[in-house]
Length: 104
Image 1: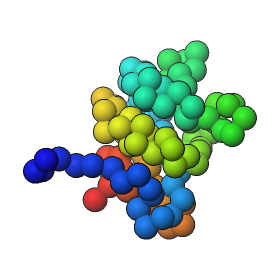
Image 2 (image 1 turned 180 degrees about the horizontal axis):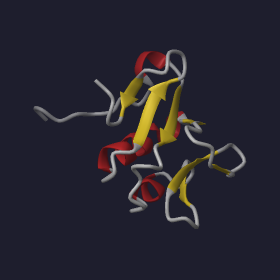
Image 3 (image 1 turned 135 degrees about the vertical axis):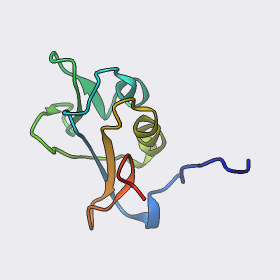
Image 4 (image 1 turned 45 degrees about the vertical axis):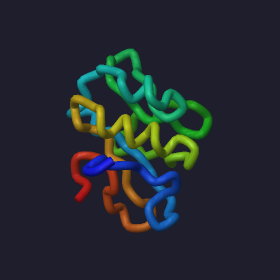
């Protein structure tokens, strides 16, 4: 469709991606956890966090989690739909944001 933005089924350039959440902007709506519960979870403080490989919430400021390729579309949809615009997806290699509020 003309003008529709689509997400590739692979990371841009085939590079590894990571995701992080700016909790200062998180509204606690939980949309991210609905789209990708394997990557995001709401904590008792009502804010969303990324999850580590062992499903542990990563609560350090700026903590990142890898974006599993099968979940790329769900993670990107989370970033696009987030009312707080607090989800950032970037390349691991150079930390350039490819999806999220600071993406070009």
